[in-house]
Length: 221
Image 1 (tube, helix red, strand yellow):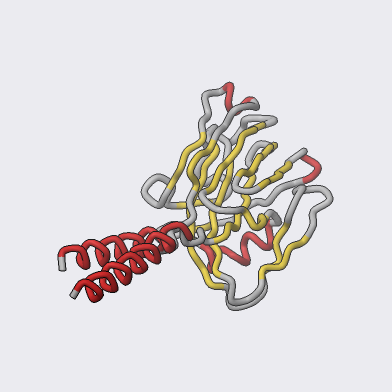
Image 2: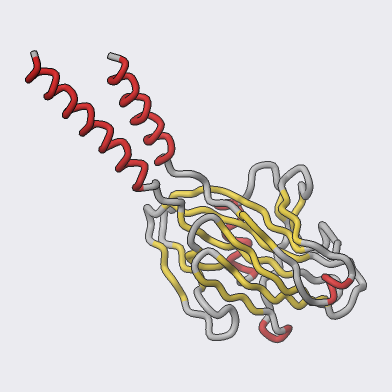
């Protein structure tokens, strides 16, 4: 019975490990541009730090990352792949797909000219695409908005200001360029982390071992 309990405990532990976790920002950097030289940093934020998000709502030299919501899409979502902009390639995520959303933005102090911010953001799961147009950002606030955060106007990227975003795998590279009284916002859509298949294998091996032991016990008896 003790051995059976051990196998059951191992199976339960493996099942817990295999449960899907939330996608999240695991690392963000602000490594270049005059916002960096002015003392800015990458800040992982939430409703307690930035209860209001929108143009001229924050006004700092920082770049912010906000984990938003896990959503199962009720309709198709068309977002952008590389590079953003120009040459943006549309990607359609089908209705019924579960995704997670994260807002990455810079909202510099009013009156500071030629704000430049360069850096990277790494997520815990694969990036599917980016919402970068102002109209689509506004249209998806209600769907993806973080609990406790009030959203005002979100400015998207402006190609004429040399804004650029690329991504590969789990890492996004950004170049934000803003004018006074402006800001740059993007909504990064990621996949939901997949269950760890090795944990399922551990559970399977445990059950096989249990069956083998019971068979041997029966033969001895």
